[in-house]
Length: 348
Length: 227
Image (cartoon, rainbow over all chains, first blue to last red; front, side, top):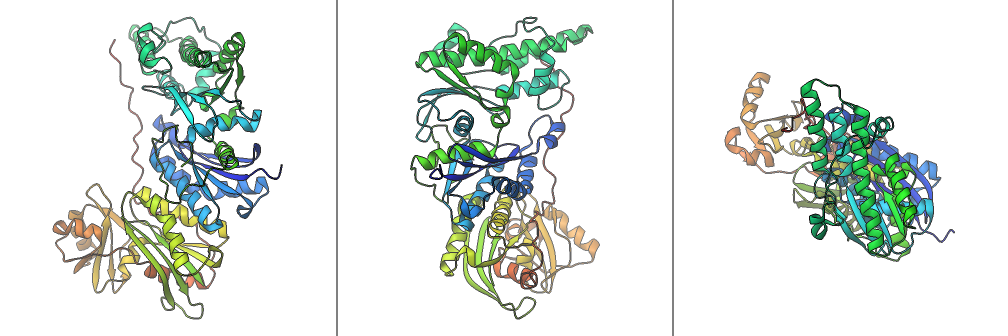
């Protein structure tokens, strides 16, 4: 076991400052400082607010993670950091910090892909990932379907959102319904008392005509607009808005499309393992519907616990450990933070 | 004692390795061993860490030889500024050595003569500035439009005879002063922190001199979609 690499992971792509420590696929520490409360009144993540918070949180969060793991920086075999995709200014705080730690502690550094890290984190909970697998990543910033072979060497994108991310749609609909930011948890809660079939909201990019160009892509912008129209029509007539029914029907539309396309991707590629990651993977309806549909098609569903689905440093460390174990060379010290890093680049 | 100095408050990525003589006081006894300056406002994140490694190598030192880190706190464009400060903070933490902050404008002002307006580029047609008399800062660092600075100085009863820095060069006409070019001097920054280094003063959290609040507006009433 002690042959496995001890890797430190640093994540700052959005509003969570995450530091994780893993040994191979064993999680030793996972510390997150979130600036989510500072963004709430703006109704979305403000990049400059997030960047400032990362700078303040870096050193204390690192201290806590190292203490909990019971290791020193001098003990680690490598430092991994999210190089992208994400908010440019936020990414740069983590990348610069990681380089500072790497130079001072004289350690190799790996700039890695945030989306691939969301997949890799599942190995901490469910062990090595069968090759190939399909991964569905859904968060406030991403909605992607990926074909995953050897994680260290490449991920093939099958589709992604062409407009809003799923989590973004949750935030916007929550605002429409007078629910707080971030919108995922309050909509999930409100939906429990609602009728998911009350309103037939549209399922983006599921029509026959979209299959040629967008079979595994997503679109949530039209859904958000449809919800807005429906709510405003009621408001005009002075009728009360049935928040629970709207929440349940909206959530059903999102989860229906996500899970249907994910299962279809598995069947198309003859893959029997589906991994779901990203903040929206904490959604109860997404988990339930994915389980139901995977069971029906003999697909094994792997979803990490919610704490590991949202952004964290452990996922970066997990991917770093995988990349180190695969013998990939370390990144050059001048690698950039790339806000649009393609998922085909797992490590710089 | 060996000290690494970093400043990323301007388009210049500045690093240096200096030796602080512990048997003297004030600005005396700071010896430059190696220095790097690369000017590229968009590549601080790429340039800084290799540059730190380079000055260490050139000075024949390893990270473990360092006794402190000194960093320019700005003011400066936020994204680049944070690169320097988080790198310095991470190095300090990794090596268990103290970090000390110095106003980056002072790294320019300490090398001026007479009464000088030091101005760096704050973008958005503004400058970060402060006035120095005999190398000492006599105004608080501020951010303003160049054309508004004269009135502020008049109110303070200060008359600058020269403007120094990239912001001054960029807005020479509005400032109506002779202009000299300069970036923060890492040796000057080290000199300003030298007494703290020598006395092993408690390390400081490196908080940027932002001088501006984040650009963020709370959303107004929601926009209606068309029926």
